[in-house]
Structure formats: structure tokens, C-alpha cells
Length: 325
Image (tube, rainbow, N blue to C red):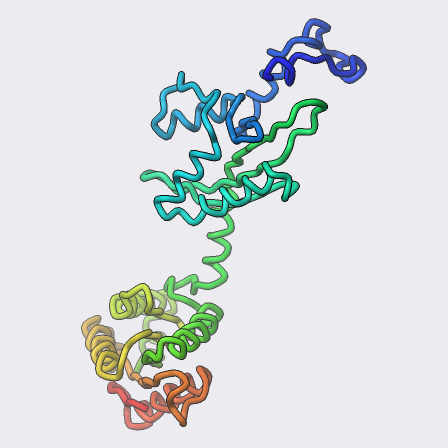
């Protein structure tokens, strides 16, 4: 079959400027496929491999196989099916798509997937499509490395959802996270806690030492908040200026109080003070509700308002403490 695919002549007019001896030489066509960066294999209708290019071999070698490993006759579909037994969701989708193309139920299949190694993150696009060649029913399987594109996309997405100074989540990310957390709390009948935090005496500190030192102070405060919201299900947010928010999923009022005290003590331990001795501290407004179960809190926007109201009660009383709504 390999000879049939690579041995027939193409229209000579298409090869103007190419040496005549290359017209009928299957080595020429193989050299073309070997020059591709994408990993390419040809398989038959049962999924058996009968050709791989050099990129395919090189990538396999990088993943532990020897360079002289014989791919011809190996069943690509069987390899993919074996991966499904390990709980690989991508492998499940690939098997379904591959079988659909091989059976003719699908014209082509495309799947984007991660393939990380211990030393680096990597992403690829898998494509499967039939080869249009008279008398031969075969399929091309290719893997394209899209790692650089994914890294750029991640960097752009991170920039769009994080505060550039502190690295905390920004308001855009906060709004989406809070909405999702509310819906999750409704489904799980689980408490959701929100802490609104405002720095006391930060303006005189910033005015006295300048914006550079003020920014450094905000970065240090952000580090305190990150330590307090250390679970994957927590989110620390720079809400604006010297105001911050912590979202704590699956956290009751008692647990949220511990976190709030940790914030107040952590900011105090930074020992930030303006020249007149006014110490930078933290005021906290705290609210805990089980979404869908509290008459005074029908939605996540009300939860935010209740926390903000509690914060203003603290500020009106002189700051440096917390109030629970």
C-alpha cells in the first residue's frame, strides 16, 4: 500500500523546476512528509498504521520510545482505547471521533488536548480525515503542536482577569467567580462567605511616602490575603484602590470569622504606618449565607451589598475591626 500511495506519477506540469527523476520517486514524497513539523501517520480502516513521518518518530522518541521502534502494523485505535481505561477523558473523545471517521459517520474529526510532560506544558490539535485517493481507503492522523499559542492565550486571559500590581483577581474575574459560587452553593446547599476588606489609614501612608511605597504596601497586603484564601475554592480580589474581597466557598460563619481575624492580624503584622504614627490596618465586613435558603439574600449581588454594608458599619465605628451581617 505504501508503494501505491507514493509511487504513482503526478502531472508533470506541476513539477516545473523539479528534477525529472523526482517525478516517480516515492522517496521524494516521503521527504516532503518528513519535512512537516506536524506528526503524521496514515492508518487503514481498522486503525492500523502503515506510515509515519519523521516528526511522529521524533516525538515518540522524546516520550521514551526508541528511534527504531517499528510503527507499521501497530493499531492506533487500539492505543487510544487503552488510554480510556486510565480515565483519560481526552482519549474517550478521540476514540469516539476516530471511530466515527473510520466508519464514515463523520467527515473529519478535530480535538485539542493537553499533553504535558514533567518538565513542560504542551498542547496539541489532533486531526483525522480520509485521504482522497482512488482505490485506496486510508486516513491521515496528524498532531500539531499548539503550545506557544496556548501559552499566549493563557497569558492574555490571566492579564484580563488579574490585577497587574498585586496579582490578585480583578473585579471582572470576581463577578464571574461569585456568580458561579452562588449557583454551586445552591446546588450543594453549602454556605458561602464573603469578606469585604478596606485598609484603614492607607491614604495618609500613601500621601506621605508616595505611590511607589504605597504600591509596595498593597503588594504586601495582597500576600496576606493570598495566605488567608489558600484553598483552590477561595478567591482573593483587589476590588479597587485599597479595597479587597475574599470569597470563601463551603465556609460557615465560624470559619469565615477565623479568616477575617487572620486578615486583620496579618495586615497589622506588616507594621505599616505613616510618619505621624497612624497605623495601616484592616476593616472587615463579613456575611455568610446558604444560597437560596436566606430570605434576606435572594442573590449574589445582595450578598455583596450585605458585606459592603457591614464594612461601612466598621468604618463608621472607627475601623480596625469586623462586623458580621
